[in-house]
Length: 280
Image (cartoon, rainbow, N blue to C red; front, side):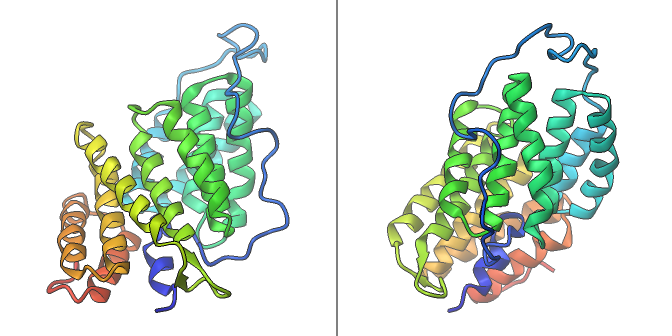
């Protein structure tokens, strides 16, 4: 089977079949020391008072998790521009991170600049939440440009920064997807060359699902974890398990009125595994 299904079921349609650019390394070390905040905490060292996070950031996160990527982009693009101009380190870093995640598909290069800004703001502010978003953003860009090894390193680092945090489950889901991509090899990368990576991906998706089960409000992350488990089961030709797990994802997506990209991914797995009922 060609990797068409993999590209369809990749988390947030991360463009794993895209071309790798010459340089996917962001400025600075994205996996090492998280840095410390310098100067007056109230100004982030900029001399500019730092304001509370705009409500639009949380709204955009929700739209992203729903698969409404265009809506997230509409919220975030003007917000990022405004927050950059006003030197709001934390808020601009968070909003840029979510923007990168929302725009990485279908053109991964669109995520490069906001991802690098999120990384820079994490380094400058020393804010752990911004550092996590920066790693998720730059990792998603790397995954979208066919560099799953670097992506996996960043996703794992994001999870380890706050293993019980609100975005830890998302970090694990993305980490699992990077492992799925690492499982494939061959000249056209359409064959499973490293089946052990599929086993590791399955374990990572299960870990994500169990983590977010105890985090009210993260049901959509749980659905993506179920989707990941189903995707791995499908690749391993365990179609009964694939159908069981994707049905759990479909229930959540339907209950939350998820966007069409998520429903299409569910239906792609259901069709490949020959499940009885599509998600609609």
